[in-house]
Length: 96
Image 1: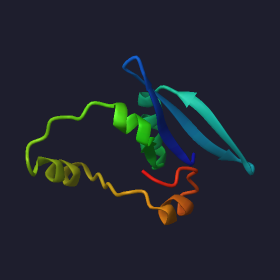
Image 2: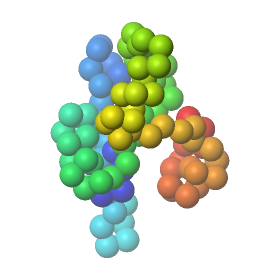
Image 3: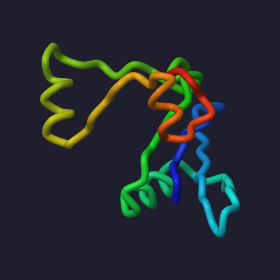
Image 4: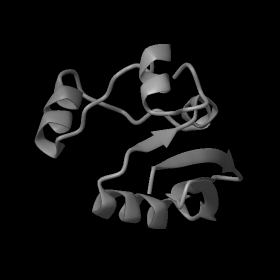
């Protein structure tokens, strides 16, 4: 398993793909995001969301300083996708 990507948001429903590599061939499987995320967590694979999905999704209300505390407590790390990082992760998207 290479990665999970949340690819679209249609009628309040998220869509995802699971990217696999097997015997030198890359495959993508459509999936429910909940299933794709569950498998990615078990396989320790990265989980991505496209810039379009992030723009279309609703912003969750946060209290000042709580976001950093929550990220630390849950072990979540966020960072901007630079062209160098995209190349390293073999991502077709160069920004995000």
